[in-house]
Structure formats: structure tokens, C-alpha cells
Amino acid sequence: MPRKRKFTMSTKYIFVTGGVTSSLGKGIIAASLAKLLQSRGYRTTIQKLDPYINIDPGTLNPYEHGECYVTNDGAETDLDLGHYERFLNVPTSQANNVTTGRIYQSVIEKERRGDFLGKTVQVVPHITNEIKDRIQILGNSGDYDIVITEIGGTVGDIESLPYIESVRQLLYELGEHNAMVVHLTLVPYLAAAGELKTKPTQHSVKTLMESGVKADVLVCRTEHELDQDLRSKLARFCNVPERAVIQSIDASTIYQVPLLMREEGLDKVVLEKLGLPSSDEADLGKWEHFVETLAHPKETIKIGLIGKYVELQDSYKSILEAFIHAGAMNEVKVDVVSIHSEELENESIEHLFSSLDGVLVAPGFGSRGIEGKIDAVRIARESKIPFLGICLGMQMAVIEFTRNVLGLNAANSVEVDENTEHPVIHLMEEQKAISEKGGTMRLGSWKCSILEGSKLAEAYGNLHIDERHRHRFELNNEYINALEEGGLKVVGVNPDTGLAEAVELADHPWFVGVQYHPEYKSTVENPHPLFVSFVKAALEYKKTRS
Image (cartoon, rainbow, N blue to C red; front, top):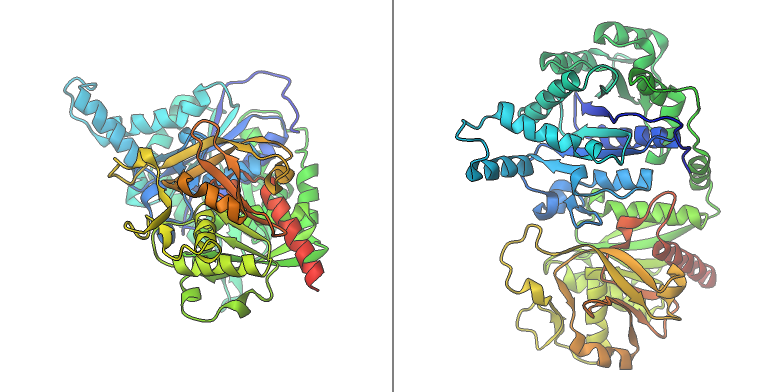
């Protein structure tokens, strides 16, 4: 547990910007810094400001944007919020993710109501004021000592300019020692010249300064060590102290980054700039144990991830990270084998599963690749391979069982076939009158009552849980009796709605399907119990198979 502070303080703000190129890892740096500050006793949170005009990522294609992460309060957010929660072990909310679309939507609604008293509505001050208000919501709540705000995109992008201007204004309004800027940039290595080049970083810092914002700390992504001469050069030309030039060298896992940042003294530099005590060291004992276990597994298991978006790993980011957490808990390395569900529809696939120790059928939407997922469920069921179905994965397990065990060959989901003779998966009642897609699903945290004696109860060690949802189709209760008589038991039910939350196969070593998304709640400190149990079952299966 992080140490408690011995003094009171007003909220401090840290802005994380990026330059040179995208995908440098601002979210990981922000989360790592937050972890270091949290371990010193500061109540820390992180928010993401995204410059795209979508209201939220809920309607974005996973190939376009990666996973859509869902919070307890039902917000569909950027996948970086998953990193924030996994590092800090603290839930995020709607306030932790802001998009340009949401900003403009709010300002336009205020203009329509007449809130601006007939004034011309402009980017400055109306849009920037809205951005500043959103940035300070978390700080004004009284729940946090330090708020870290990650600015999406790259400095110099047209769409990021209002955010950078808002940061400039806040730096002035909040005053010295209350706000600062951490700028993440790239120091590329040119193999032909055999050296690291600082010019891209210099130009990035110059672009930031042209907007009136000065970087207080430089975090430099690099493939090679930065020597002292190069650090001195960067400090001299970028107007920062040498100790504020922080090396972020490539790591084998993102979970090493907080430890690397502690070695570089990032947290100390930040605390000095904010006028806060920095004498105590960050206590990362549990984190170090996790990283050590991760680096030295005793066994390796193979889990087949059956999905529709496997070409882009970020599409299933939370699932992949949950496997890392659960693997470390079981002292095993989980080798995730990505299998495209569409490919399973066009060939004999049994051989693909012969080397697997477990099968996970992933979430998704639409009819593409559905039959491949159903066939994957069949093989896992018939071959007694440990199986976990999440959301759509659970629905595919129900359809497969209804077709191949109960003999209702026409069974399907109305999402795939609106006129199916046996709609074992149908549209939720409250969804039937909805025509819009954005933010209209069953979202956020919902209760689940678990059947005593089930695999689910054994995994959780509890009969009453709360899990996060993101779906609009559900198991049709009219088929529950037939399913249970055949051996597929409903072991989790929402106590308020009566909707099925989880199913298990009675005559199978470990076969569980859940309508919710357990991966969203897995963190380094608290690996999700369902993933821990699934990985343990896969390890036991491997031992019996070998």
C-alpha cells in the first residue's frame, strides 16, 4: 500500500505532451509517473484528452483505434485508461477521458441554451474554457493530490492546438509549483551514421514553445543509452536542467517502465518542480516482485485467442494484459496464439488446437467470423480443452451447444440472423427501440449472483460480484431450461433483471462463458480471479496432456 502523506496540499497538475511521432508511449509514461507518485503516498489519477471529433471511441472500428475500454460508470473510453487502472489499481470514470467531440458538443449545447448571452462563440475563450474546466474536474473533486493529463496526438497537429493553448493558460493561472509539463519525444538512432540524433527533439520542443508552452521535463524514447554529452546537449538546446533529461529506453515489458523511471529519477524531478518533498524513495516492492515473477516463469502454456480483429493486438489489449497478470500469479508465461475466426471457416481446423492448453473466444460485434468462433467452441467442448468465452464468446458457446448437443440446428443470434427459428441469443428488451449506436448498449458495472459450488464461485471465492458490461444482445431466457437439462448450466444471474451473466458446462474440466468483460478489472495488484482460474486450469490440462 502507498504511504500516507503527513501534510495537506492543493491539487497539482502535470501535463504530458508528445512530439516527433505518435505511439511513443505517452500513456505508459503517464501511468508510470503516476505509479511512482502514488507509491510515495500521493493520491494520483490520470486523464486522457483525445483530439478526435468522435464523442467517444464506442463507435470506432477496433482496427482504427484499438480496444474500447469501459469504466464502472459506463463510459466508453480510450484504451489508455486501461493502462491507468492496471498501473494504479484505482478505477477511472467518464471524467478521465475527454474528446474534442465531447468538448464541442457541450459548448454547442450551451450556446443553444443561451448560456453565452448572445456572444460570438469562438475557440478562444469558449472551447479553451471548456477544456480547462474538464481538466480541473478531477482536481476540484478533492479526491486527488496530483492530476496527470495526457494530451493525445503530437505537438504541432492542428487538432491538438486548442488543448495546448488551454495548457498554456492553465500554467499561467495555476501558478508556479502548481503545474508543469512533461514532454515525451524521440531520439532516433541512425545506423548509417552510428549515432543518436537530437535534432528531432529540438524541433519538437521548439514547436511546443511556439505555442507558448515550455517543457519542464524531457522524456526521451530511445533504443540506445543516452550518454552524458548527449543529455547535456539536449538540456542546453531545450532549456531544461540536465537532471530533467530522462532516458526512456526500450523495455521488454511495459511493467518495467516504472522501475526504469525511478532509476532515472523522474519522480524526484517532478516533485522538486511542484515544490513537494522528494526525500522518501518510491516503495515498489510488490511491483518489483511482479516484474521478477514475470521475467522468470516456471512453465509456459499456450492459449488460443479466437477473434475477429487479431491483426491489431490493441484490439484485445485488456485481455492480453489480464493474461500477463494471471500468468505471473500462476508463475507461468502465457503464450497467446492469435487465431482469426474467419480463417477457421475455410479449412479443417482441428490441428490448430492440438497444441493449445486453453481456448478463449473473444468479444466482438457483427456476423463476420461467427461460424469460425462456433467451431472453435465445439472443438474446445469436445476435446475437453479449458475454455473461456467473453461476451460474444459466451453467446457463441450457447449457440454451439444448442446446435450440436440439443440438436436445434437453426439456432442463432438475431444479431446474425433476424429471422432465426431458434433465437437463443436475442436483443435486450430495452435495446429494441434504439436506433443510434453510440453509448446505447448495456454499459458499466452490473451485479451478478453466482451459483454456489460452480467453477465461477470457486474462482471468485464469492457469490456476489460486480462486473463491467458492453453489449446489447443476451441469452434468451426461454431456452434456459433446455440448456440446463442438456448440461449447460446458468451459474451467474443479474439479481435485478434476471438476465443470464454466466454459463458452465457440467461435464467439462473448465468451460465457462461470461456475458461481462472480466478483463477490464484485471490489474497488476489484483489479477482478475477468472483469468487466474482459467490459466491454472490450462496449466493442469497441459500437465495431463503431456
